Length: 106
Image (cartoon, rainbow, N blue to C red; front, top):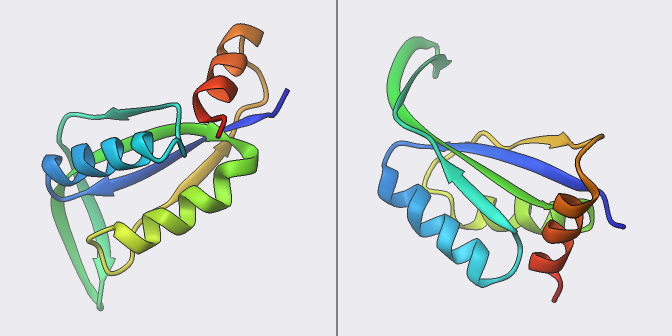
C-alpha cells in the first residue's frame, strides 16, 4: 500500500481554498481537503513584521502524488510565495490508507 502525506497551505480568502480543494479533488490528486476557520498569521515579509487573516487548507494524498500536488499548488496558488508544508503519515488505520489510495487512483 502506498504511504500517504498531509500537505498544508494557507489562503487569504476562504473562496480560494474552496476552489483549489474542488480542483484538486476533480483532478484526483487528493483524497480529501479540510479548510479551517480563520487564523491570524504573523510573519516577516519584505523586511516588515506583518499579520494577516488566513485560512489553512489541509489535503491528504499518496506519497507518490506528493510532487504533483505541490507543483499544481504552485501553479494555481494566488500567493507570490505560498506556504506548502508536507508531513508524512507514519501511522494510520489500514482502512483509511486504503481509502486515500482508492480516491487518488487514476
